[in-house]
Image 1 (cartoon, rainbow, N blue to C red):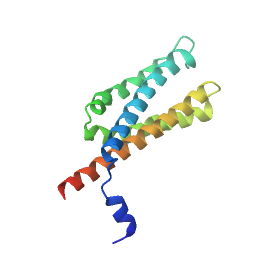
Image 2 (cartoon, rainbow, N blue to C red; image 1 turned 45 degrees about the vertical axis):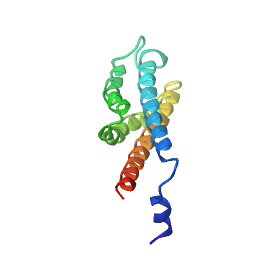
Image 3 (cartoon, one colour; image 1 turned 135 degrees about the horizontal axis):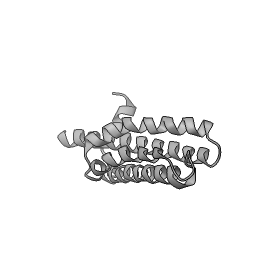
Image 4 (cartoon, rainbow, N blue to C red; image 1 turned 60 degrees about the vertical axis):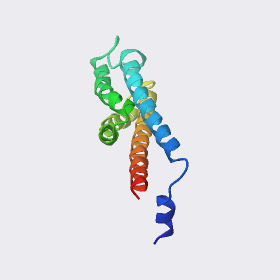
Length: 135
C-alpha cells in the first residue's frame, strides 16, 4: 500500500470540524458572489449609467443557496460546476473592463475559486467520512 494512501485514508479528529468549515466557506463565498454581482452591476461599475440588467446574473446564484444551507450533497456537486461560468465572466471582464470593473472582476474570480475549492473539499470530506463510517 502506498504511504500517501494510508495518510489520506486515515480518519482524523478534525474531519467534522473541517466539514463545517468548508460548508460555511461555500455559503460565505456564494453569498459574497451574490452581493458582489448586485453591487457591481447596480452601483459600483455598471455597464450603463444607473445600473444594468446584468444584475440579473445574481438570480441563478440564489437557487443553490438553500441547498447549501440544508447541507445537500447534490447541491455542492453541481454548484462546483456552475461556478465556472462566473469564473469565466470574471476572467474576461478582468482583462477587458476599465477600473474599477476589472478589480471587481478579480474579486469575482477569487470568490469563484474559493467556492469551487470549498465545494470540492466538502464533498471529498463527506465521502471520506461515509467510507470510514462504513468500515
